[in-house]
Image (tube, rainbow, N blue to C red; front, top):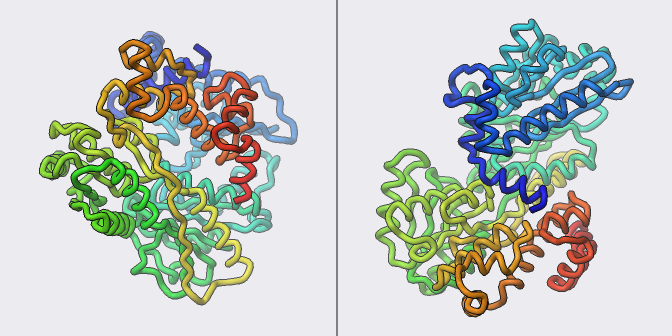
Length: 561
């Protein structure tokens, strides 16, 4: 087993709950002292990946101590643990959240905590800095908002001063590039993909981007004070993500500043507003095609627990397609996302549906609730209830007892389209007429919740291939999962899937490679390696054989489109 496969296996064995307890203790709301050596070793034995996690931080600290810095600062971006910056005169951290962070408190000149989420600091680190009378900048507005209360209101100026002017960060310099404020209500995976598409454009345009969280989750100020923010940032443009908004922001809030809205409710779009939104009809078509192809007795839609335009539109579009195909349609709104009452109600409703039934849900989170409620009611997934969600949120789709098929949305294109529109507006001023750009869905990411097979051995084999094809799984491995003779495994698999085990493995690998190529962030060698191929030449041959294009041509074509 290679190191990549070993590390991935260790990661898969670590539950989110165990990781949170390791970092923050049994009770995350309570103060705690550091783990003893014996406690650490016990955790390492139970979850080997945690030793690698700690060793990675220790390696950064060693390199930090050994690195000599001249006029150019050295910056360590410690994945998911924060940032350490070393200059000729200063050493400081930004959002350092590793449990070992207190061990370098003596060496740090100061620390920055951008907001008070637990993935941006630990209480032990804060206490260690405070106990040594070290400066901690943490006085930020609205979590992700502007630093309005720090000395002269310019965090960059403070950092520059404490760094001995190695980096000159004056507001006059910041205005050499356009400043864009990005208002966001959620930091889930799908929204981060959307912002990634925006950043791709923003980097090329050399924009300075600042993200501001708003909505009910920001208890102290759900609706940002744009007048105060504009006085501080003097932005050239704004992006407003309205997808999860329970607080309405209007054109009046943004005065004459060019603004693009994302997923704005149609009923609230004002004259002159510029919007980018998803095409609910194309999303519903993909879901309907996936479920109708199964030839089920009935079909249903489960709405988001609160009335929202994206959920309502997806449900309405799905209903029209189902009824136009002469099939029975049912609809239900989840009572709540938490608490047993909502899940019990959902279980009763699912039990009342004609079986087998295909259920399309507002998003992957609702799909997870449907799977859990169906299993609680003694229903089989996908035998009795086949499920399709939306967003292809890996954290939701892959961690359930039955993995969930989901509609993958081109979130990056939405963010990129919003940035492109904003660039046009910042160059030529506000448009006088309403403009709505629509971006469609990408594909169905098929998983166990819609893979209905008569032979459970085939179902287990297909799921094993889907999860492990890129880890170097072999035909013999799959036959072992099926638990029968090789000849019977070949026969039953081909009968139900329509092609061989090897073809299924190659199909999954090529699909994964195509996804990596579309992102365009890895070298060709890395794409082949992460897709399960032993060499780049083998990867190129397999990819061209199945797609008709070389990996380079495929990547270039996607980039041009």
